[in-house]
Length: 338
Length: 260
Image (cartoon, rainbow over all chains, first blue to last red; front, side, top):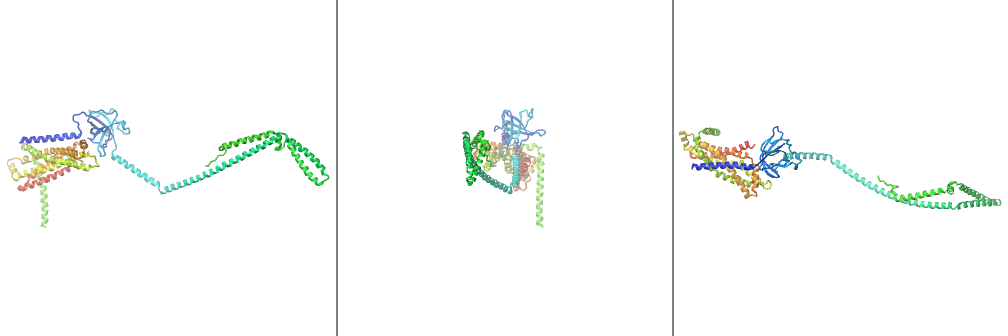
């Protein structure tokens, strides 16, 4: 009976110890007898990471956080990761500490630094050796900002936004809005005025264009008429009939003067008439003499044919000018609103 | 005036009784520590007491733990629905069983079973003058009766609590698989998520103090039983009540001391 009790007591004790030790090791994630890898990580801060938190690689849980210690001098924090598998780290391995979920539990994730170029991984001095002989190396780590820091940053941003909004509200008050509305009205009025001015200018321009066109036509007609006249004058001058006409006029004048002298005596009434006729003929004679002497424009025309040629050249140039004006009116008529 | 005097006297008597009880408990504790040297007296009785206090308490402890684990998982699932991932059922079952319900419920249950048993046994010995007989025979009754029981409580209580914790977690796991839409990996993930070895140490420390409390209170009230069979019943009741109260006070004490 007593041995039975002893056996039962011993069995309960052994069972309880096995359960306690085995359960603790199991829940701790201890891998019984399998090869492990130890990695040491240096960081500026570990955030909410604590011993026992999981270690992941490519999303797979491969170990746990074994220890967290502040370096002598407080320059960094050294975290020891115990990996449950024998594995080799990436060449540019780094460790990112961050929340595993929204419920506060953190994890250490082994990553390739090239995947996170913006993370400020801790710069491990060259030649840094792990404290533990079992550790395969020392890598730099980076702890993501805690949610409380993000919340504080968000709060600061909201405060700044509120300040900015208040300033905007102060600067953009009712008076500013009224001024802006007035300015918009003014702009609208100016636009309408400009539009009206443009319309007027276009009407004027159209009128000017029409007038210029009409004037050009008239000038062209006048030029043609002048040319025809000059042609006639030239023809008249060239065929020498003019000289004979003048000679005939002189002869006729001489004959008339003789007749008049004959008529002066018997008839005094007729005498005055003849005197006037004589005076007229004298004038004609004087004119004729001046024409023959080459005085005046007509005389110069009669004596100098180059004058007529130049006049023809001028008319020709004028004709070309009219043609060019008609083809390229913008060279000579320029409209500008402003 | 006489009524006032009577009430004042009652308050004074209660105070004196309380202080006397504390004093007697202190003396009993000191005697028990001194009696630890008398291994020849308590040694032969330790194994039977270990069996009575520990082994025979395992079934009731496991029974309580089983249903506690089941209820915990179901209530956690009910609470977490739609808001918290279901794998946190494992977290809650594990943490709650190890830190709180395992030790406390086991302690309360064993205070009724073991504390009452000890108080009744020793109280009966007291009222039947068996303890006086031991003294007459030059046996140290504290070494003979108290030390093996208190040691048995200190040794076996943590073990029973460990088993109760394990069974409670297993029961919660089973309930999660059978009654909830939760897989074993998810439950284990939640169970491991916030597990710390310190949790087991904390549970162990609490259990030791609970075991000492239950057995020591039972011994005390048994040792100071007066008034025959009625006194034995009264002592038994008080032993259970006082032990339960002290367990709850210690529970808060250890939480305040070790979890802050």
